[in-house]
Length: 176
Image (cartoon, rainbow, N blue to C red; front, side, top):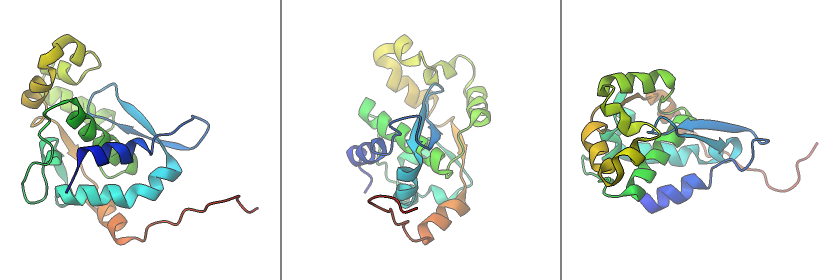
């Protein structure tokens, strides 16, 4: 079963610690969130992320709503977005899935989502939305964005990753 605490812990461990190391950027739900993930760590956890996505059942859909990402493949809700920690888990899962290439969340997709929600409603996913709406932000987000944000899914890449062997990570000094 998908667990927010585990998702947060596992994905935060993939963050790039320096811009001097190779990294992949994943975009979050909010338009101002772009997270750099350490490329090597990300590669070692791609299968784990693909398994999480398989639990949500999104690999069976070429286009998903954000709401679908909060449900398991049997239709049960694993993330009710009851608090900011729940939101953080969902945002990290989306950003990491984007960095892995499983979900498309580039500038074009963000613009399409803004257009779908409308200018006034899209404030909820802007960098200032949380500050402007205060305590009402999460409830407003659930009403406005959850069913109106869509993301293309690379079903083949998810399947390919699930069928592949987990890459072996070399430890110790690199041989020349």
